[in-house]
Length: 275
Image (tube, rainbow, N blue to C red; front, side, top):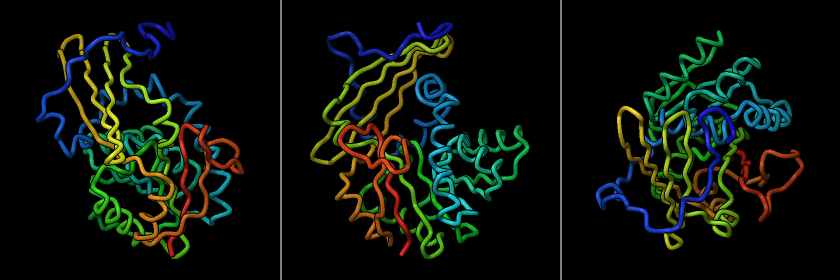
């Protein structure tokens, strides 16, 4: 046990696990609902502890002054876990998320912490904002949910909102490390809610499929799905080039700012500049 009413994430027992229906598997926009309340409950338990966020923000702070950052675009801002502390530190921050529920949560967090920041419901492929920004942040795997063409289109639109030389940081899973240690199933119990995670790897498409089934004590079962494009560094370099960026650094696991990402890094932080 890791706390009251909680069990550690562990692999599910061996045996067959019922797969979602074909229609559910084929949902191309499952990301629109996957990252909402059920996900945040699990995220708080597994990877969004205050110490994790502090590590990420400490990592970022090593660069912000060096890059001359004052205005930040928090792309895929979720419920504002980076938006609020960056605004509290004096940066002018605009958060964008495709989920109206997440933006509602982000705005509530802004009001609760009495900081000045904006959160907008929008699709980053098409949104028009009041730029230019000095930095665009894609934290917690918030990039890679569309076709390759639409992923480029999204980054091109972000590029239009950055000043020349403005920075882009993409925090992504390390594809090579994820493939080498791929886990197909896991489960957790959080406060009486039971989570079954099932993962599939499509090496031909370079993507990971994620199915999440949540049992609610009162509401019963809910199913979610999303597909995340897993780019190699070489592929991502080309995507960034097509979108108007040049890749500068590949860092690993929000550790020492001088530490380069390698095969042992669980996550990679891609840093590029607008050209």
